[in-house]
Length: 359
Image (tube, rainbow, N blue to C red; front, side, top):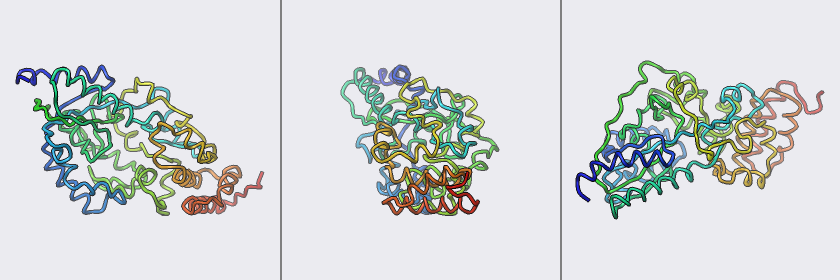
């Protein structure tokens, strides 16, 4: 392939990406030396909790050519996910009887949506570039997604550690194509957070311990999704009614005034997960959970952790005989993990003097 064709290819890639439903695409080099040092410091502090995979791959996470031999460039893309038809996140958070699910997870599993479209984009590139080496990723391998997107000019890293874009806020997914094509790279965007600390101030559990520094062990997204064991007792009250993930730091970010809704039906709300009652979701048995989370990112936590999370949220709900009866119906659940959280939740309500026989 002649050099001039490589110079022209990035514009074609950006156009093809938009045709496939991505809002933006950019190209980054593979120099992540600074990010590698920051990652090492983060791991040394133990902030990854029991996410052992964050350290398991050594330098392959920060050196793309070690993960995929021959990689010279990374094509980074973003795709909006906020559903057009979702109930107001704040309205759900303000109703302690309702279940809050992070807005990225109320529709179809984003891994499948982005991966399929990235493969189509990669094949489209091959029609012009000829035979070339590539591999696509969507939060599915040791990839420094935010750092690569930053280097590709898709935005800057906010103080909550997520990527921010002046025209789109942060309600979007990221995906990558590792390639051996020596493409021209884009320039990173300057940071625009200024002195704002709203994301730090709003975090329910104080997980954002400093600007750009997240202690995952305190993060509600980590506790309700990645963490497999018991949720620390001292953090349970702060979880509120959040049963899968947390969006608080995004909800208060001024840049999300410019966020755009998704135009893809894939991310439309399924099974009323944007506004369901906690008690209704707590009633799902394992078969119902599997059926209703088929094709959803939620399915990865399994039914046991689903009940653990909802039991915790029910313990934080407004006391009522209705809620206490639902909890007591699960008091003898086969899982010790579920029983522990149910017992804690029952105790919260019994302290208020509520009993399931009250009128």
